[in-house]
Image (cartoon, rainbow, N blue to C red; front, side, top):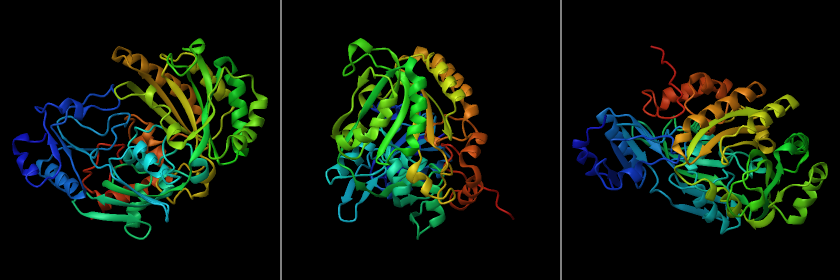
Amino acid sequence: MVDTGTFSRLTSTFRGRVIRPMDEDYDEARALYNGMIDKRPALIAQPTDAADVARALQFGREQGSLTAIRGGGHNGPGLGSCDDGLVIDLSQMRSVEVDPNSRTVTAAAGCTQGDLDRATHAHGLAVPAGIVSTTGIGGLTLGGGHGYLTRKHGLTIDNLVEATVVLADGRVVTASETEHSDLFWALRGGGGNFGVVTEFVYQAHPVSQVYAGPIFWRLEDAREVMRAYRHFLPQAPEELGIFLGLKSVPSTAPFPEAIWGQRICALISCYNGTAEEAEAVLQPLRAELPEPIMDGMATMPFPDVQAMFDPLLPPGLQWYWKGDFVKELPDEAIEAHIEQASKSPSELSLMHLYPVDGAVRRVAPDATAWSARDATWSMVIAAIDPDPAKADELRRWGRAYWEAVHPYTMGGAYINFMMEEGEERIRATYGPNYDRLRQVKAEYDPENVFRVNQNISPAAVAV
């Protein structure tokens, strides 16, 4: 536990703010995106730069405190915080600089997806990343990062050029293909196990207006939609990002009131091109399927599609996540999905299959820590509701759904879609890269200072 009585030793050289439990805004500062998780840190340090981060880490080590690193706070199991320890909250570090000539973007670690999207959109560019604009780019990137642009341009980590990292011993280093290349390898998918990244440099790509939106079918049509989708995806141009969801229509605008609350199968798409080009691509899929109950496809700025889910998913909802990587979608798996989706406990609960094919597969499995390069989808099952009284029901449904479909998956999962599930699941996620990750951990964090995460323990050092 942090000795708050000595916190002046931190604040005397710390340029940012340090928040204590007695401060008026403590509850606001400690609140996490997942309302199911409630943690009470002893101190929350909000640095302004890498030097502040190094000072906070030093203080935490001097105090012998548990230290958690928080970016956007979206982490499912709340691993951006801890009880009775120190939270280093990067949320005040929000600068974004775009170089339109080199198409590179330098973003501080406290930025959200929305910060990144708005800055790059002004130059007709975008960085492949997630699909919810309030997500922090730090955790998203370190976990791998996938979204609408992934099929064409790869994972977020495939577009990471370099990172500025504060190590456990306080050193500030640059990690890239040419500097600390072993650390750079591990950062690309290995989560927050190796240091605090304070700045990311990304490669961006030309993206401006897109043709995007959701198309809904009744759950009774899900069998047809899922079969058609699994056959369509491998032939679809990579300019089309298209994921499948089993969910319910939220009882709110802009959805037609006549279908509020209905369980559905959805295809949510984003085509980097014109409406005419996109419809020509989608026509073979549409021709196979029944008439949808809603078609929300429209031309819009890319940041708008990125923010499409934001109004439905404000901070503080109850969340229970489960995930897996998926290679194939046989008929037996489709039946299991439909059966479990028909029992969803709330309108916001969902299952999504995000494509991770295309450009993702053009990177070797051992080129980065992310090893699931032969997957077709990254699956998430998310049980969501605003009512804390439904927490147990959400957990039960999420676990039952996952247990029903897990036999049809690859074993590991995207770490950003995992709760605290233990070492076996982490090993399965990294596969043959796991042992190398432990070696890098031993090099850069031998004392496991960074352990409030999907933890990779350091390899034992031979004496």
